[in-house]
Length: 499
Ligand SMILES: Cc1cc2nc3c(=O)[nH]c(=O)nc-3n(C[C@H](O)[C@H](O)[C@H](O)COP(=O)(O)OP(=O)(O)OC[C@H]3O[C@@H](n4cnc5c(N)ncnc54)[C@H](O)[C@@H]3O)c2cc1C
Image (cartoon, rainbow, N blue to C red; front, side, top):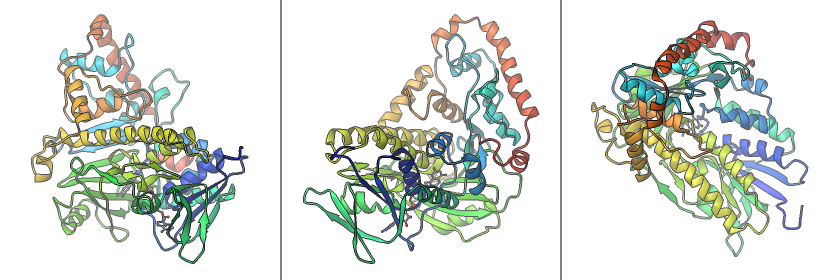
């Protein structure tokens, strides 16, 4: 530690983002003497509906030294093998975005390219035949990844569905037990230095709270990043017009599925997230296309008797123009919002934290360092935005005005990616990006976007061998599915076994 080192951090907000930040920072900064305080307002609630995750959440929990088995039990978690999309291309059609490996590469050619050639040769293939995660999901079964296995089980990956309110409690206990100081106070504003940096927070009950670095996890309001520093918001609602959600829990009417179900509705889509003790449901919709009462009626007609009053939320798709300004870093809903179609929000909290560690400042807060942080997170946000818009823009639904309008506008970056894929079946995901070429393939494929040509090098392989290999690969998948327990049985007999 030097004289220019950060010595104190204050996190504003005790939702999922705040306690994730506290849990990771207290672990990573252990031994440095940096004091971490989290302040949360007892009378301002959390959003608390973030219930579906993606596989990197497990790495985050490991890094934060959270005991996975205990976490799974304490948060009523179930296992998630991917997302099934229902009625997006047209009513009655469904497709998968599963986790983990898919087929095998042949002569270093990715399996989707082999797939495109197979289709050109008249073969009919389906994703669950070659994706173990999708096949298990379709069968309502669950298997653990087996890194040493010769077949597809080695490449299996999974994530969690969990009760978001319980997650905040578990991480709060975890972080405070390791030395994070928790203050229950309402922050009323920020005291700024002459150079615009935040010197301290003003507290409703009187007094101030000073720190070197502030992490704004105050939710949509963006107490520091927006209200104090006024960085501005980039509005993406011209591409993603959904701006409201209604969430309701229901009891299980069938065994819990090991996947998130995203069902397209008349003016948006509905999530179905099975937890151990209940099912989380919600309708994400565009208020310009349906009014709140009609949306609630449509949701309740689909999900049945609610266990609690429906919860209403409002948002605007987009992002802060800067995620990090001066000595304030925004995480979670304070940093921006993308509808939870691909469970990216909690992941963006992890990603923002990792990038913060990669660019951890000293008291100089070098602008060039901050600029790189903002640029890399902007790239990530924009790629996630494009990926979500893709789920809508290729729809062939024309049953409501909402769906008829979906292809009207797409970001230029997505238009370029669509053109590339249509030309040659390549998606051009960059190394290290969350959504790999394979993820893009699943959604292109599911939304009926077909390439005109496939990778010419696939023709270098002997296609008779490929024809012989395809049934073998599908057989490996179906064998594992046949000997795997149901997801419900897995949860009942071995609550923390996958962890
Ligand atoms: C409809 C919907 C569905 C979602 N589904 C998913 C999903 O399936 N998967 C996923 O990854 N993400 C999902 N998300 C996003 C996810 O909920 C959030 O990313 C996550 O909950 C993080 O929220 P947060 O902690 O940033 O904010 P919040 O939960 O809003 O917490 C804000 C905190 O700030 C505190 N605070 C606010 N003002 C003050 C003040 N003045 N003084 C002191 N404290 C203050 C509050 O008390 C609270 O503790 C969803 C979001 C919505 C809206």
